[in-house]
Length: 245
Image 1 (tube, rainbow, N blue to C red):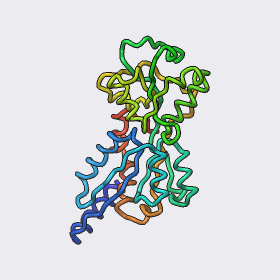
Image 2 (cartoon, rainbow, N blue to C red):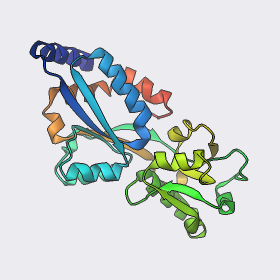
Image 3 (cartoon, helix red, strand yellow):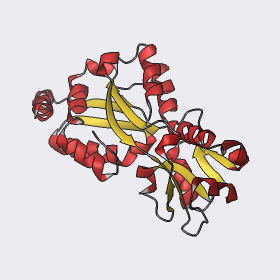
């Protein structure tokens, strides 16, 4: 209710001045569809506020922000890159909270002979998002090493710039499979979830969210940030397969 009242008040103020404010988001690629719907729903409630979302790997986005790219709200796919921006004094530590949770799966063609994680050694090409910048890739690498499989399959791994590109490779048949988030796999046209990676093998996939120092000073950014805490926003996230606690 507070978020809606703030948004409506902001809309009235902006309407009276004829000024359309902008809120800039930097969002992990795996949240693309859910955030696009959140932006659409919010836009119908509030006029004269344009929410612009920049999607990409969490690491790439964090580096962009550290180099001066405009951002009012940052949503990472793991705490590491959020901590990086806090250490860079670009995000106030007291603004950070958990937005949602996810899990890691292997997606691929329905006819692949994969019944357990060890079966991936039978595959020829496996897509993962680059561990250098993508949390999904980092979780995948962590899981494969914990399972004692990384050295056996490292020459089969095809690096993608982010988790969405990894899914595209598998969905088009350009690779046998891809390690992606469960929420991404549910959006595939051809590929299916072949197996869920045991949670004991990797850290829980956590999405932290925060206002930047710049965003914290913008009423329109604060209003959208508060909207993302509402029951309505939670329902949208759950629709796309995210876990919200």
